[in-house]
Length: 81
Image (cartoon, rainbow, N blue to C red; front, side, top):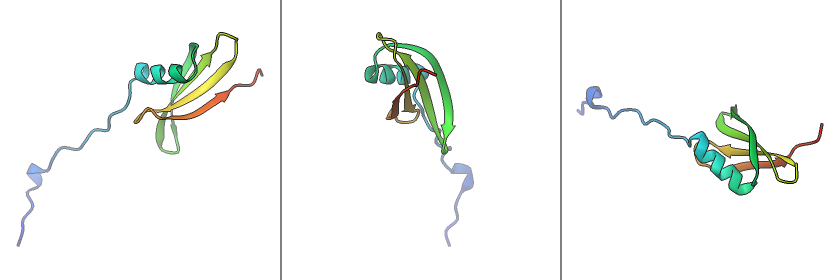
């Protein structure tokens, strides 16, 4: 019979995520401009950075970047309201 030694169980893997600065660089590569606001939210169980970027022509965009992978999941121009 096999016996498992629980004391030698490997430590839990900590999930890595991008820093805010890394995610910001990704967002600005997609929509150049000035970041005016940043949020981090849990959407459907996934951490997402939300960047609000004001472009040179005064248009406001929301860019969402997955915190774990850096994948852009949303680019949307905000309404003027």
